[in-house]
Image (cartoon, rainbow, N blue to C red; front, side, top):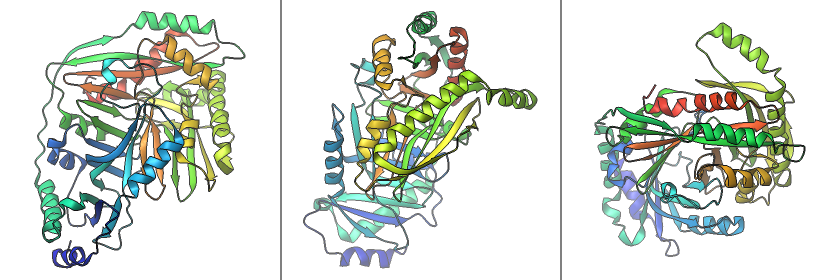
Amino acid sequence: MNVQSSQQLIEDLTLDSNTPYLAVVFSLDGFNLSEAKILDYFKEHKGERYWFKSKENVFNKIGIGYLDGFTRSNFDSGTLDELKTTVFQKLQYIKLDESIDMKADLFGGMRFDDKKSSDEWMDFDMVGFHLARWQFDLEKNAGIFIIEKDELEKQGLVRYILHTLEGIERSSVKVRISSIKSEHEIFPEEWKNLVKETLNVLDSDFLKVVLSRQLLVRMDEHIDLNFIINRLLDEAGTYIVYFERKNSVFVSKTPEKLFNVFNNKLLTNAIAGSIPRTQDYRVNDANKAEFLRDEKNLFEHIVVRDSIIEDIKAYTHDIMYDYKPSIMENRYIYHLYTPIEAVLNEDANLFDVLYQMHPTPAVGGLPKNLAQEYIKEHEFYTRGLYAAPLGFISENNDAEFVVALRSMLIKGSSATLFAGAGIVEGSDPELEYVETTTKFRPMLNVLEAL
């Protein structure tokens, strides 16, 4: 960053009186920054930090300090689109490097459903999107600093940004490791009985429902968030969601994209049907071959795929996908996988797309409304952000949302882990229980409980 030329750009800028914020776009060239360093440097902003990393390394976004945004107690796509536009209209941009193509994001999402929340989810809004004061994208090697114009001092602005970046670079991240005090499965036998009861109500009109359960892990002291942040980087091929709100932290290492939109092209995928991964490659090869022929898993996958295609039809055209699924490989589990792409209609509202696609049959069931009501009535807890859509919308209408699986909620010295299994005709309660146990492993690994 050339201080003199950058400062001259700021001083020559004519401020627009109709926009209350100035968004300064800058390069990170020459700075050795990491996710851990950025989040640690801004530790005084605990409760207003997020980290969202793409599994394809397309973006790696970190936000600090929730400057603006909006929250709602219910989901209304028209209102949300207006609120989004209002927030972005408050920004006047200045680029300190013309080669950088970066716009501000709103990060957030909505809870899985509107079931009355238990106290554990009170820190998170039913619907909430946040405009962070500091926004970094380590894949683009760029950042944005947003400042209120009535607090702006042009003369020292560039040096303040430079001083902050130098401080982040010098940051020495200290990590404290906690020990597991206890692990407690919440209602395991009752959950198996619920699966048995559910099998009796499934029929040609109610094809599938995803039932989830919880595992409570207590540590011997407060969980060190720097430790969690470092542990999240130990596995490729998944999204990373780290979302602080007030006194809670929601963490997810999900493989599942809900959808993304870049340059008016919508990409989504069907991920449904799963088997555990072993340590023996010969066993894995045999299991994968059988997996692609397994009728239960194939049926579950095709149901999910066709439902997603039906969901996006009203908002897209030129839909393309492969008829036969492939296998997505994660550290502990294999999934059947079908990528789907389409062209977004010009008049499509992204919040309409979000509302229509959530929940996918992979996390809710089919028919969607019937499954969602069944979950709300019969599961033993409030899902909150588990299996909920989380992600970002950019000012240029690019967006990416994930389905927040393989997740946990951290509060103080405890972490509540979540995992679910798709129940269809022929499901075995004991096998579904084992599947959910496998799905706890990614978050147990983050806690280093394995």
